[in-house]
Image 1 (cartoon, rainbow over the protein chains, first blue to last red):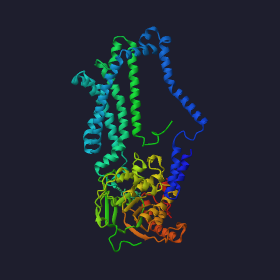
Image 2 (tube, rainbow over the protein chains, first blue to last red):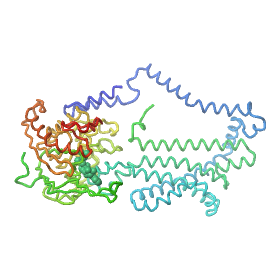
Image 3 (spheres, rainbow over the protein chains, first blue to last red):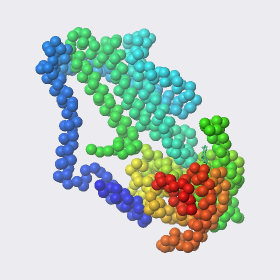
Image 4 (spheres, helix red, strand yellow):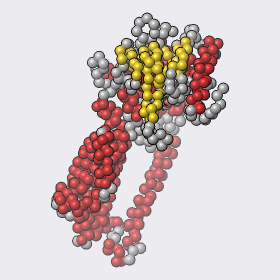
Length: 305
Length: 302
Ligand SMILES: Nc1ncnc2c1ncn2[C@@H]1O[C@H](COP(=O)(O)OP(=O)(O)OP(=O)(O)O)[C@@H](O)[C@H]1O
Ligand SMILES: [Mg+2]
């Protein structure tokens, strides 16, 4: 509340530098959230936050309840076999963890997606920077990139399998392919949207081309690049699961399909549950990284509570 | 008030002409050549504070870019210390209207930006020396204690102070300022004007200051150069003599101020009318700028 007035005061004070400096020091602590609140107000804040948390989780809780009770009480017996209640799935998940199977499948999936994703990020950022920096290269490559970008990665799965077999190479490749384009396009966009005024300012400070790139263009493009990386993370898992469903001997996609074919329905759901938890986790991590690198952008990233 | 007589002037513009080729449009499919500056000659002596006014589109920013070495003239010469300007250099610093701070750097890191890497004399600053300089210059512009703030955490006036500190930090001889206070509210602007005069007095920089405020031009400048509407030609240079400005009295109501202000106003009057007829409405003869309030009052000159 008191922050804006203090800003004004510091700013419009004509006096010597020392005065403004002192005002600034007084000002700093006021910025910390939660300080200067009475205990009652703080309690109310926590209560509100708690309420918000319950409300925010409400839909999930309802869904889980429906999953638990629905098959038993609402569904006909024939469906119940294909849609076991939640606790049965959790039991299956427990067994899979206990005998180490789940960890094996998870490890297989993770190592594939991590390698594919890593290859994609490194090569797409590098190519994106080149393309954005050299206009001629962009005009040359852009039409081709558009074609590839609009070809769904999964449509190419048979091609990858034919050319690279059903081993690790084809899976890592298709993950890399799917993750490549979001990163590439965002890298190009990030470099393109650098504020021309900043480039002028940097030039007027006498920066060389290389320094300009390193100190202005790259830092200013980083948040956009990380948005691309986050999108790539999501799509790399998606594509990998699909690829593992088609031809693999391990991995979460294999677990799901294999359980289905062996009629181990609870195991199948345990696999699906793992996939969605993994997706959530990956997205959460990448959002955190993205936010870390764009915290200078607006006040949104630094918003507390 | 010594215009460039005697020793070589700090800055010398000799018959500058700058043209732009306009991209082809529907109206003129071949594209056209637009003369932004036409035959500008001007000498500025060391330590002088000169302000530059002119209607919108008269080529003020173009002139500043030439001085900064960001562009080259089509004919004529830009000399600094008697040597032709070959590109940007650390003897000149630019302050832009829109702050142009690097948003991913803190205030201190913005100020020390120009100190990274080797200087023209090959001198390198250590990290510690840079931080020290940043602190020193942020203090000079009244922002001591704000070193770790990001630009989005600063007000407009504070940002412009950081930008001024950044341009001062690598100790240029010449400050080139392009409407630096135009986006600020009246109080902040007046305060920064006073501080700029103080900094000028203590550091002895040569300052070229573009503005579209007549009051600002007369208040700050030792001379006011008036550009004509496009193509920009130097219409006249008005010498400003306000006596001792360090006193507490309100200089702006001083009769000499009013007289100078009227003189610049009259010079601009025709030019503004002409510019407005050509579709610009940036500067009003009374010195207000409608684009700040977004109320366009065309044709209401005089
Ligand atoms: N890169 C460019 N290409 C083509 N035309 C340009 C370019 N830069 C400036 N111009 C033209 O040159 C003229 C002078 O522009 P300039 O920006 O110097 O005006 P100004 O006096 O700074 O105006 P303002 O007060 O509105 O900032 C304008 O008509 C503008 O359209
Ligand atoms: Mg301009």
